Image 1 (cartoon, one colour):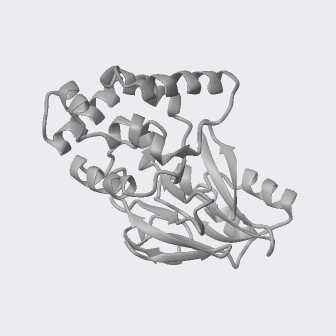
Image 2: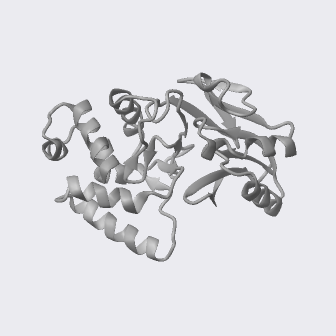
Image 3: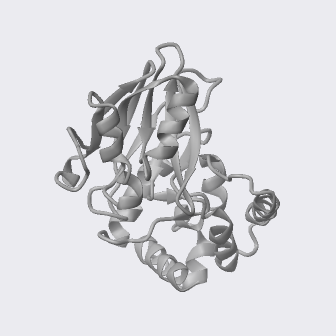
Length: 257
């Protein structure tokens, strides 16, 4: 299974999952159709699946055009997004499975950013390869999504599911927000040496217009404040020992950053 990252809009990433042997592909959150169609033409592959994480237009904006071009494509999304994702045919929930390129993906129900958000987790087939997580706008490199339809408690539960995944999991999040996220993180976790080093690395990468996605989950666990709501240093930063309140206050601070 090969993943190609396709930039779209101002800061979105679309992910094309390619089965090179069968010359087929699946796309995750196609914000636009044209860059996907261009990539498919270049590699000579047919699109057979659209994996949507949630209904926002910058994640489903290309659905209709891709369906028109590939009428046999299957469109996947969360069961609770019924009626909100264009062309949706498959309605997934916690524990559902999806198959592609010889890999079985597990569906995680991760509400918070929206009430129906899901993520697709493809466990590693062997110890030498990383696992892959397509998490939409739930977890970002160095941050997390805004709470448009959910609560801090829901998001903590959702991110807890992600935090339990293996450290070598590649996190394919849908936006290039990393630099701003880490600048904020340093304001609430200033003595974290891993975070300090990561910020400098990301500054250098972005100065060369290099992508910072995918990130690695083990790095997120050490440096992302929105996976560290139960760490004393983060709780001290917001004057709370309650994990959900700590997360909520951190999210509120990020909104004003």
